[in-house]
Length: 338
Ligand SMILES: Cc1cc2nc3c(=O)[nH]c(=O)nc-3n(C[C@H](O)[C@H](O)[C@H](O)COP(=O)(O)OP(=O)(O)OC[C@H]3O[C@@H](n4cnc5c(N)ncnc54)[C@H](O)[C@@H]3O)c2cc1C
Ligand code: FES
Image 1 (cartoon, protein in one colour):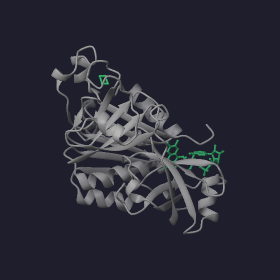
Image 2: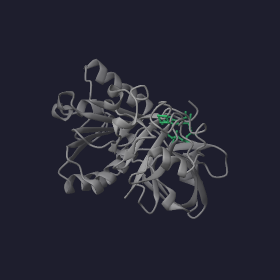
Image 3: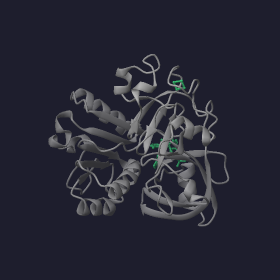
Image 4: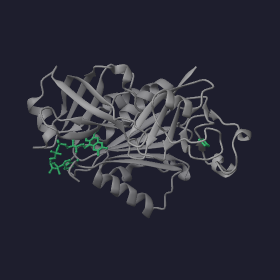
């Protein structure tokens, strides 16, 4: 048995290694030329201490000393990678930069395979990657796409899953925006395009309690990736979503959301539109449309993604209503020059 281990470095870079049954994470990392911090390799120094964000593993407390890792730390999910043997796919936070660990940022070259206008404000594009097997990411993560014929990049969250035949993205068409103008006016199917990544700590963790997704505008993209991945894995707790946009025409990909809702009893969602001239039956912001029971008295994991102002507004709303979810993850679609 072989497990996928995502190593998340302090600078936002994520590296992926394969770990065999009975192999420690440190052994697997070095085998695959990732110089993660280690020293004694014997459970004595604590140099290799990391935090396991998700996944299961064996780590025999008799094989390391309290100075390297205390009982409390082990209970909180800290691990010694020189002792940790994964028994499932895992995500591990490494307290070091990718550069220090000599992990090169992965660049993926490909061909622009699709550019579709989803609405007057939103564009979808897809890339056929040259080496699709090497493209591994966690649903919710993003990449930096180079705007063709420039040296500028823009960040985009995958709306597809790693096993999909194309890497897909959903993009807001900003008037005079550089990437927006490229996609809406100059893009040619088949032309070269590349991206670097994956990056980010906004990704789907194992669903262990009711979960609430809050999406604003093209912030729907990472949730599409998460939902597609959940369609494969299934979910044992309810996943509810509010998808808010400014104008009626900003609502996109609802057919996909309806399909997931129809096919999977664990998923429910509704959308809302902020603009006063909207013909939508639910008007206002996402916070106006969160059902009380979707918050499950705070025993809920909340994922939030959208434009800067929307994410800040939802965070303020949660604070002022004294809602302290079990876990809260967010991604802000910050404009590139900020
Ligand atoms: C981690 C991360 C993930 C992202 N994922 C996505 C995604 O999946 N889909 C997506 O559509 N966007 C996403 N973004 C935003 C994206 O990277 C670009 O900023 C956006 O697409 C604008 O690029 P552009 O080249 O068209 O415009 P630019 O040339 O960068 O900007 C043109 C003008 O528009 C303004 N502007 C730029 N972005 C915004 C905005 N969001 N709201 C208001 N004004 C703006 C700029 O300040 C500038 O004045 C993400 C951003 C981050 C940081
Ligand atoms: S390398 Fe010393 S405890 Fe792991």
